[in-house]
View (cartoon, rainbow, N blue to C red):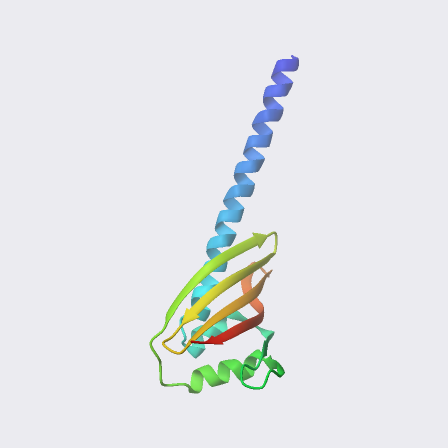
Amino acid sequence: MKKMIFLLAVLFAVATLQNSFAQTTNDEAAVRACLQEYMSGDGNRMEKAFHPSATMKYIDAATGEFKDVPIADFIARAKANTTKSERKIEIVSVNVEGTAANGKIKIETDKVILYDYMNLLKINGEWKIVSKIFSRMNK
């Protein structure tokens, strides 16, 4: 009887872990898909990746000044930018814990290297970027 109870407890634990792992895998894929929308460079697709109240914060490379920009301003600039430069862009890392996640993205052009750090939340079952900070280094 004790062996049966122990076996049932082990089976329950394995099933719970499998379900948790599957959920984490699904969430990571959904976070990566959201980041891909941002990485597209297309203003309309980028807009879908961000929560409307998201912000972008950074230190201006030229002046050293702290900037705090509403995401709507950033998206408007992306939509207005019709010149697309050659760039290499990749997701460096993704971390998901429950309904929060973060992603690190590297963008490299012939002149600069940027690292974007995105914070995401799962809002009404959908992953959205709620804040973006970045670092820019001239080559």
